[in-house]
Image 1 (cartoon, one colour):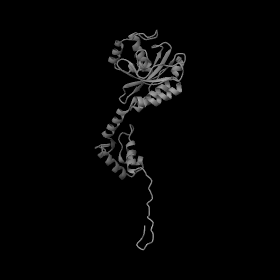
Image 2 (cartoon, one colour):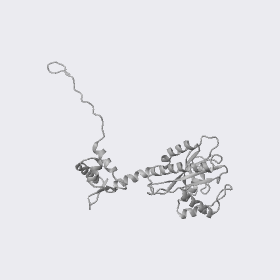
Image 3 (tube, one colour):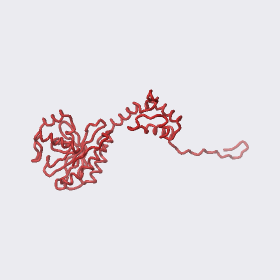
Image 4 (cartoon, helix red, strand yellow):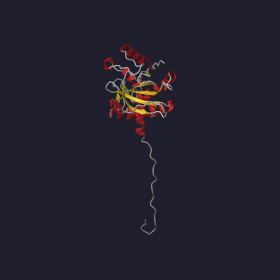
Length: 278
């Protein structure tokens, strides 16, 4: 570019500023995350102390969040709590959680650890419906495919899915029939009810060559945000590999995986630890 006197002049360029997070947004998110079961309501002074911000800054942030429904203010003591908009957003996230997608990495991890077939099943019209299966790479393995149906009373996943239903639903499952598939199948209603009691007591179900000779499995429940059992994760394999000792050795990892998927679906377990009998 030329100046009026003919000399050249270079255009000055402004340095490009690095993108940084908006501090006000980051602080607003930090403020929301400060709330917990232990701290259901928090005052401005405590919030400022926790966040390391000035009271005036926290007050402005809180006022903005209140106007958007993210926070509510207790009229009696002035403390703040999470608002209904947060509940609505959380409910939306929970509704969009897909049990198949959430369970997939845990099924894969268990399959790699055990070397056996992992499956995810749901209850559908008085039957088990397998909605995801990761097959064992071994020559002898469980042969079910996605979309296969199986009876409730003689599969580990079926027992789990039945055990946590209402009494009316359990009555309906029994009324549907308990046909024998092998000599080990539970066909007596009273015996089946006792089996369901045992499932609830220990937190997992075992199937001992009850649907097919030479096949054993173990399964645990997956719960939704409401606490309802919506699926079951199972490990299945040939009886010569899945001895009772081996089967029970998988229980801990299986329960942890089922619990992890439940948490991903929004389930909040009771404060006390679940008793897991062997």
